[in-house]
Length: 571
Image 1: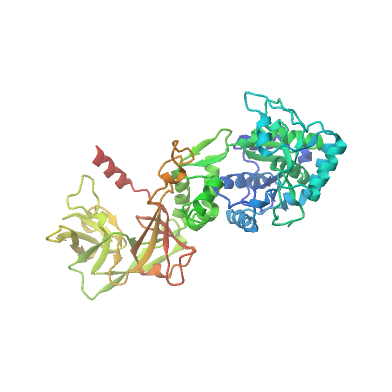
Image 2: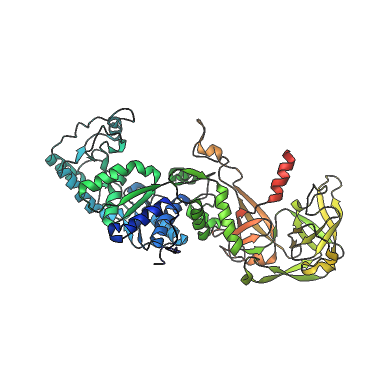
């Protein structure tokens, strides 16, 4: 099996979903001579998002599993919205996910053939040139309860239609003046079959063909024919294209394609607390609500990549949610769990304190800095260890102390013993507060010298383990804390009178700093870490500089105590 489509799957495995079962059946029946050809056909009018990743994983994954082929085809039929920038970014995203295409194709490669086939349909009496405006076409089409009406130009002669279509191509008419429409059935129950537009006059410089064409095929006219030209056997698309399937098949029948691609629809990916619409994403970008297509709060693959997600975590997420026939919304937490699971295995551990509180170990020698051994990743024995300076004064997190601890508290409290991660056990002896404000200023503790390297004499049990950083040599690093961009689970469906912008989460990006262990000063852009007991972080690709990393949170850790304390507070 070719490695270009990503990780292969054991072909003896049983099919996991209805598409795999369909293809297994087709292979067993030797349809298409046992040949399998897939394609991923994005329009280059924006950056890919995680919804596209589902289609990528399905198409390229099936090619890998069944020893087939998969093309990347750009459906570039709307030049006013399409740019080379998007073509390049889409290729980068697919490769980042771990896939490679067998053939790079463009719908624009087929413009001449599509024009010839359109001319064939005119000669067959299956297409005509229409002078109705776009608004008039909509009015004539009818609706779900009312049939459409024939265009007054529907009965033009074949000769007149051929003449007008040729003059459309030569640029004789202004934009929008005429369209080429398929002649099907204006009373069809499928509205899409009511004489759909095949070509429209639109003068816009194409990113590949320049100004060669002044009219362009519609998606419906180009898509199925592109599949046929490339020998696609299984045309897989999301559910909304199910309504287009009768037209897809009609066009292929009319141009005489004998071995036709078989279109199958699957549920698209919807994720809570975000939007997938390119129009919505473009609005957020153009109006300055986010930094660009690669803003880590967006569901774009470039944003997710900058956020620090791994391609493995995205592929595992897609495998976990499966392929269904009915649309549903996946909780954002499911995606976060996927990246946590992967980063837990590969991310280097480090320590950092975000809400610092000074802890003074009174019986530790003043001038001593002892090196303690810290594990880089307990899930990976090959990750090795590092040396951490342990000294009299350290910073701990303020959230790890309670003056009056609740039941089952296992962190710092007056008289309570805890272990400083990789270091010694300490016991709080004195709490220093500001006499006027009552603000907690400092904790004074004593350490037990016999508790080095995880040892506890007398078999006593230590209440808990907390993280820390040495006060004299820690480094202060800027940090971005990301949260979901929207404050409501379904921002695509906002109440009447409200807009998408009304539900932006004002705390989706919080700028702060953290006191970090010294080794983090050497972090390079793209390095990922688990800041112990805090979360997973990445050195931001854009903001980090050599010797000056800028960290960004990929995902928080699951904090079971925070949830328990919240429940106690509300009970």
